[in-house]
Image: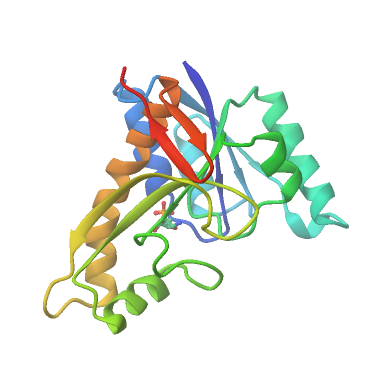
Length: 209
Ligand code: GRF
């Protein structure tokens, strides 16, 4: 059983958080969400956690003098809850490097495109899907990856694809991708909990059971 901490930002709906909670309850993940850490106390994802009896703790970056101090405050919460894995779910910032190094290859993120396409700084929410539509790609999808020190550049764990359909808007494409996000994230976490992931260079190997 792994102990999962989920990090969210101010506006996140928390639908990926919910998908992870549900997968734990249904034993599709051998683990549980033990804490949600957010940048804003009244964010929808924080309320969602609390309503299900999961502690939701605000650590506000602006309350600290430096990124490092903010990172240390988050590390303290992670240590206090004995977190094995940190899952970013709608966390819109670069994670402080002291968290990344303390939890190397134990932090995951989900991005609503097929990395390395339509990712990096400024690529979030509808911008991602609009960029995919403007480029004219015929497939898009989502990526679960380990987090390193940059935006969306860490080793890829799982990708799932969806077709881009005639007449799609950013909204319709986002909705199609989101269905796959809710499958991909629990799958990636379960692989981690089973000890089946290893990282070599920037390649994630998935080992048999
Ligand atoms: C998702 O689209 C995810 O890919 C991105 O942020 C969004 C979060 O949505 N990183 P939700 O809060 O999980 O519903």
